[in-house]
Image (cartoon, rainbow, N blue to C red; front, side, top):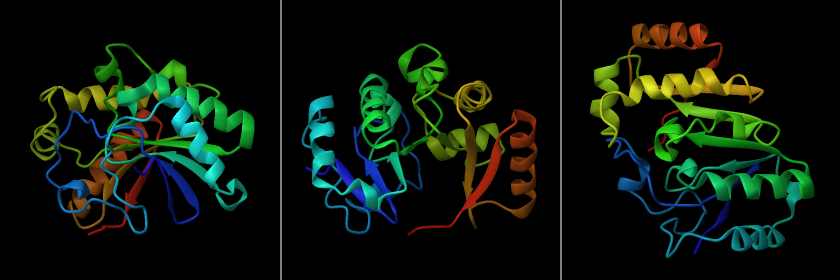
Length: 200
């Protein structure tokens, strides 16, 4: 079962396959792996100990960043994520990023952003579109149409605790005008806007 896997110069952590969304564009609908990752569908969710033990199988000098991002929403297991992040910081002093849908506070029924302070260097949030209704159509979030506002609120609060907060869309999936609207949203929240390359 694949817990840690390499993508470019970063080491990714696959904590869970759970996700509150069923995005129409999600890569896991058409594949079971990323590049040379091995199968990312987990037989069971790994314990903190199992995740930490897997780091011994990698030369951490080879990696720029540790990224919580697998075939699920990493904040579904926020307590495990934070314990592993604490270990990585203390042991390897690496930059740590979470790739997230931004619904972690809804998932955990509490504002999780203060818990990221001192552990997480970057939070990358999938904005997807500037339109609330379109966002719900794309993500099919189990939390309903209010998910969009909750995701924006998460981004706004995360800025207080995380040095680098980024919101992303995927190139070619929205119009240039929509990208301008996304930039305005990011500017209003005090976060960076990044257009990610399309991956098929």
